[in-house]
Image (cartoon, rainbow, N blue to C red; front, side, top):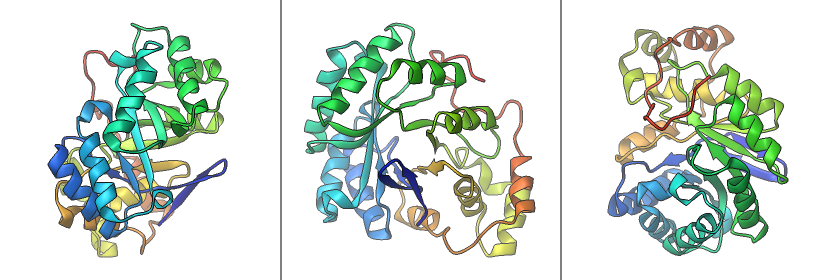
Amino acid sequence: MIFRNWQDTSIPALGFGTYELDNAAAEKMVVAAAEIGYRHFDTAQMYHNEEGVGRGLKSSGLARDDYFLTTKIWPDNFQSGDLQTSVVESLRKLDLDHVDLLLLHWPTEDIPLRETIAALNEVKNLGMTRLIGISNFPTELIERAVGHSPLPLAVNQVEYHPYLDQSKVLECLRANNMLLTTYCPLARAKVLNDPTLRAIGDAHGKSAAQVTLRWLLQQDDVMAIPKSGSPKNAKANFEIFDFNLSEAEMADITELAISNGRLIDPGFAPKWD
């Protein structure tokens, strides 16, 4: 396993995502992922599966200190008071007294960012989470969030894969001592049939998906949370620690980025970099 060290916290760089898994599927897959070796799990209020993730973690037999868990607050709960209450509810569903990382899921103009960041700081100070951060924030909003937060922000979780250039966001995060967690790291399976990725994979005895995940984790300060509803695919995604990509191969993959490579762009999204 590769780890990212943020202050005094060591975070497994490869995590297991649970988006689009219902409670039953989330419980089953978290148990399977734990058996495979995953120790970093990601959920969100909007996924409506926190209960299943919590049951899966309990059933896995993992001690609380042996895994890293992230959940995310939906913008409907960003007002001070609502945010704190929603985190208490998330912890109830997860059957835990704290999470390891708590993120603001999407930026919104409906609630002043300063107010939301203050509420996020409060739940951290109350011990409901070890770390706090943001998700889907472009560079301008990263800087604003950092400026509003007395406590350091640890992570920005964003879409990132070979077809989407996130160099500006990554540069901004590094300048602010933050990590980047990528969702949709396999570009919704678009990487599977990419000739460049497949050719690199053939040279290493690996799949295009495994090459993609390795490319992400060979970038400093980057973590990835591929989701899977299949234990077979989850296991394959985990088998990326026994090979390395050359500098030339890393560059070839980076060059796959295209101007319209973004896949997740809802109507409420911010202005992207």
